[in-house]
Image (cartoon, rainbow, N blue to C red; front, side):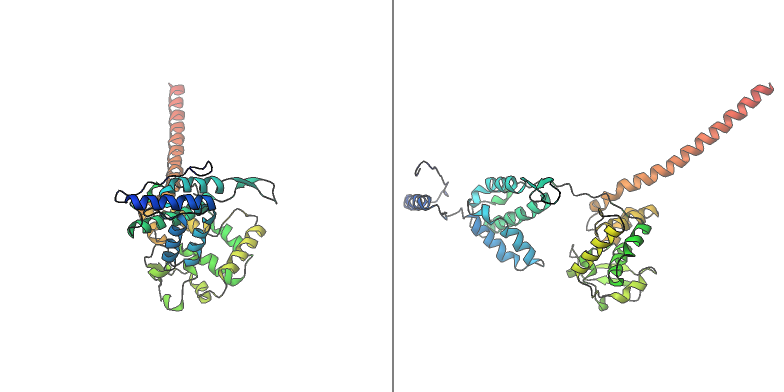
Length: 331
């Protein structure tokens, strides 16, 4: 204890008495200066995040991954690897605090749950790397609990609604919009399509250009073919984002996201009687569980079909009662 502040470290079993005394002296000195101490087997979280940053340099979205890790800086300086649970709880508490939107005056969390989880994922990976490199006695990343996320969207567009939004865009932006609906491809995948990927009857998206790291082969249908002359897209990703934002406002559908085109592809196919397995293949899902999010739409189709059967039964039942009543009158 130094100046009323208590701190403790649990050292590995093979730590000698001399090492323990040295660490104690370092702790006392650090507490007096307000700094961190690197204890064998328990590196500071800043060092853990540095490990992740080195790892992230090899990832496809290196800059984005580093940004998520750097966001944890203010909390990392206060904790060590063995305090991963406390570290994560502190991050979640601060990032989830309500702040007022200066435009609307409404209060909302400072960071979305998905954003918090992306940052915590970098810490979990960094702690896993520290364990793999024998810098910690266990994988402290397993102690980190993430935030529950409910990002399931139920926004499905009709072909007419897509046509209305697209009508407010340039041809380049329209090409991206219709390609998203007619292939079910993600926006990032569309911008990776090159001339050599477009064949006579199909588009082949290499595995390096897909989210699942698996190649996708998309059939070219007649409605898509006129838009392929715009590929590869010369408009930028930001250009499409801006065009989509303006168009959805002009069309009176401000709540619609570009990614909803992918979901709309699935919902329209379901309405046309296509099975979930085929839809999963078209969308490039890596497992069938992902496609099950559209299962409730299939149930609604079945309900509509059975409602028609129910109506038929009611109609025939009324006719039968009428016939019975006529026979009773004659008798």
